[in-house]
Length: 145
Image 1: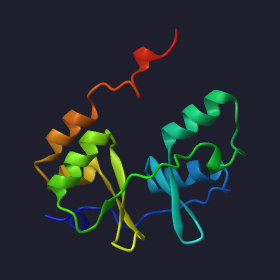
Image 2 (image 1 turned 30 degrees about the vertical axis):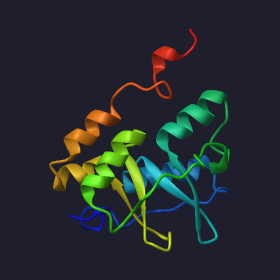
Image 3 (image 1 turned 90 degrees about the vertical axis):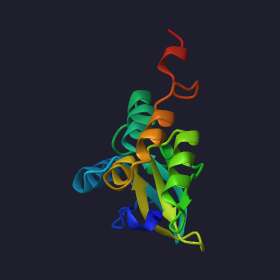
Image 4 (image 1 turned 135 degrees about the horizontal axis):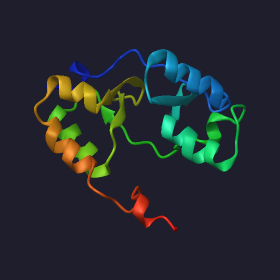
């Protein structure tokens, strides 16, 4: 089965110059925790609800701060014609719960999440196991006390 068969196609987008409040309202309206960030016709990053909380709110930045202040610029993505098993393994390895989905011209066509995969694929349990394993990058116990 291909990712295109399980991904969410109706993807809302934000711009790096949009405010965090705009992004948060859009997340609320579409009941999602992640938004692709586009500039012109290019995907330039992703922003999550956690990015807003940790990179901005925790640092004292308010709702008028820009999406660019919180977004992740390093893009991880998958292709719409890839097999679900390959994408699950990749998500596990890089420990992400959601990935933007692009066509072979690298144009955004949707997002795939663990919940999308769980509804349609038995391989999700393996991906989830890899995603939730502790890592130094995200491990709270490695933070200075």
